[in-house]
Image (cartoon, rainbow, N blue to C red; front, side):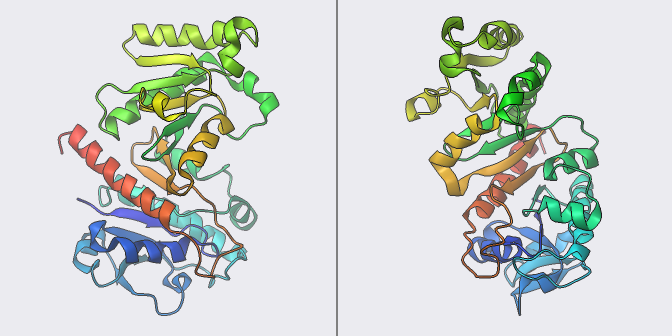
Amino acid sequence: MKPVILTSGEPSGVGPELALKAWDLLGERLPFCWIGDPRHLGTKPRIVEIETLDKVSKVIGDGMPVLRHAFARPAISGQTTPENAQGVIDVIERAVALVQSGDASAICTGPIHKKALQDGAGFAFPGHTEFLAHLAGVKRVVMMLASDQLRVVPTTIHIAIKDIRAALTADLIEDTIRITHAGLIKDFGLKNPRIAVAGLNPHAGEGGAMGNDEIDLITPLIDRLIEQGFNLTGPLPADTMFHARARKNYDAAICMYHDQALIPIKTLDFDRGVNVTLGLPFIRTSPDHGTAFDIAGKGIADPTSLIEALKMAQTMAKARGETHGD
C-alpha cells in the first residue's frame, strides 16, 4: 500500500513535534512520510530523508521518512514567521500533486494558522478545506468529524447563529447528504449507509410549535431522497439523537450547524476526533486541533488526534481500494 503523506502545517506550532511523536508510537505499523523543512523538527531528530515515496517502506524502521521542502526561515515555537507562509502553502500543493499522481494513498494535513498565511502570503482561502477543494477542482466538499463512537457532518460551518436559517437551502442540505452518502460507501466501506438528519429547531420543531423549518424544508427533502433509495431518518431532535442507544441506529449524523455537530463528538471523544474532507477525489484527514502556539516546543502536546487521523487515512485508503477492486 502506498504511504500516507503528512504535511508539516504551521512550523511554529505543534505540528512538527507531533509528527515525530506519532512516528515514535506507530513505527512500521503505519508507513507515512512527512513533508517539510527538517530544521523545523528540532535538534537531531531521528529522521531519514528520502527523495521518492517508494523508499518509505525501506527506511521507516530507521527513522521518520522526510521529503525535504526548504522553507525561507527556521521556525520559532509559538511565533509565526511571515517568510515561511509560502512554504506552508507549497507543501500542501506538493502533497496534493503526490496523491493525485498515485505516489501516496492519502493526505493527512498538519494544522495551519490561517491568519499567518494571509499576512505572509496573501492566502485567499478561508482554510485548508477550501484550498484543497480548489486544488482538486471541486466546487462542493463536506467536513466530517469522525471517531469510533460517532460521525457527524455540519451542513453549515463557520457562520453566525443568526445567519444559519438563510444559509440552509434544500440544495445545500441535499448536497451534504449526497456527498456524505457517497463518502460512507467509498471511504468507509458501507454498502447501505444509514444517515440520521437533525432538525434545526428544538425538538425538531415539535410539529410546528417551535418552528416550521422541519415541515417546510427538511422533511420534504428527506422524503424525496428516501424515495430515491437513501436510507435516511429524521428530522430528529438534536437533544435525543446522540446518546449511546440512539447512535446504534445510524452510521453518520447530518446536522444543521457547526455546534450541533461538534459539541456531541467533542464531548464523547475529544482527543480522538478526526477531521475528514468528503467529496475530494483523494483522501484527506486532519487532527481536530489547531497549531496550539501556547504549548509549541514544550514537548507536552498530545499526539492522539494526529495518530487517529493517520490511522483513519490508512483505513479509508484501504476501503477505497477495496471498493474499486484495487
